[in-house]
Figure 1: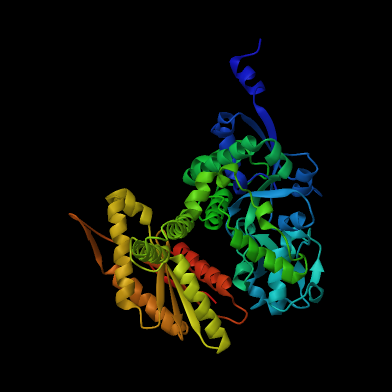
Figure 2: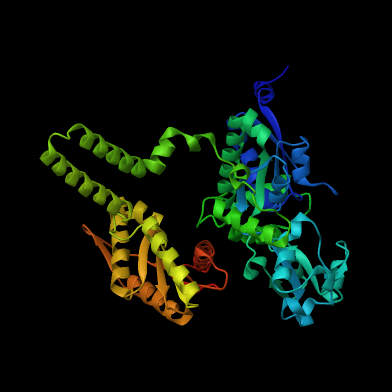
Length: 522
C-alpha cells in the first residue's frame, strides 16, 4: 500500500537539471535545494545528473532531454545561432577558468609559452582562455598543443608547461603534490566572463512560466543555504554526491574558492547585468565568433512581473509626471486665452514647476548631490573632451562598507545620515573640476579630468582616511563607517561604459581584499 509520501511524490512535476561536470561543491546549491525540500515546496521533483563523456549540456537542453542545464558564457553563441536558450542566473560572477604553469619552469608571462607544450581543450568551454592568449598576442598555432588527457605527471615534471584548469579544483591537487603554481586569469587580461550559467529554453518559459520561476527561486534559495552552511553542505556531498571521491579538505578548498567567484557579500547570488553580458558579447564579436545585432534582452531571463504597469510607473514615473505637467500647461493656455493676465501667471507657475521637476530629476534628494542621470551627462562630455585632446581622466567609484549592517543596527534614518556624511566628505575633499555624484544606494562616483593614476589614488586615499576618522552622529547614536574605492583611468578606445565597468571591477577587488581600501585597475 502506498504511503502518503509516495502519493505526494507522484503529484510532483518531475524535471531534470544537467550539470556541466561531475558532482562537487560547484553545484552544491542545487543539492541543498533538493535536500532541504525547496523544490518540493514549489511542487517539483528535481533530478540532477552529471555530465557524461562527449556530451554538451546546452545541446542536451535544446534537444529536450533535460529542462535545465548548467553551462558557460559561451552559451551566448548558441543564442546568436538562433537556438532558443535563455540564461536564468549566473552563479559565478567570474569564470573559474584559468591557465596554470609550474613556477619552477620559469614561465614569467604568457609570451613565454610560445612553442611550448600546453594542454588546452577547445570549444566554447575555453573561449575566455583563448581570448586571453589572443589579447597577449599569442595564437593557438604558436603553441605545441598536447591532448587533453595528457597525464598530470607531465605537468609536474615540466614536460607540459601549462594546462587549463578551474581555480576551484586543480590548484588543490597540485598544492598537495608540492608544486608551486603561477596562475594566469583571463580577467587580468580584460576577459571577464560569467561562469556556471543556469539555462533553460524559451519554450519552457512560454509554456510553463511558473515552473521556471519556481525552479529558479528554489535553486537560489538552495545556493544561499549552501553558502551559509558550508560544513553541512560538504557533509551532504561526502554522503550522497561524492562520485569523484574527493576528500573533505578538497571540498573545503573548492567551497572557499567558489564563494570568491560567487561574491555573495557584494551581489545577490545569480546576479546578471545586461551591460556585463554586452561586454562578453563585444569580446566574442571582436574574436569573430559573434555577429553584431544579437538581442540580449531575449537571451537574459525576464520574469513576467518585471513588465507590469507598476514596474513601468516605478521606472518612468518622473518622466510621466513631467509630460503630464507639460500637457496640462498647454491645455490651460488654450482654454483661458481670454484671461491673458491669468494665463501669464499660470504659465510662469508651470514653468517654475517644470524647472523644479527638471532639477529634481538631476539631483539626489537625500544628499543633494547630482544623481546618476546628471553624472552621466557630464561624464560623457568629460570623456569626449579627454579623448579629443588626448588628455588624462580618472574615475573613482566608492561604496560604503557593510551598509546593510548600519541600517540593521541603527535604523534606516541613521543609514540616511551616513549617506549624507559621505556626501559632505566628498564636498570637503574633491577639487575644482572634479565632478561627483551619488550613483544610487550606497554607491558614489567621482570623475577627475586632467588627473592621472597617482593623483587619483591620492584623492581616493584622502577620501577613505577622512571618512574612516569621521564619526556619524544620529540622535544619541555614534558610529563609524568606511568605504571601499575602485579607481581606473581612461585608456585608448575606452568609452563611458568600459571605463565605469573597469572602475566597478576595481571596487569589487577592493571589497574582496577586505574592504576599507583603494584598488586601481588598468
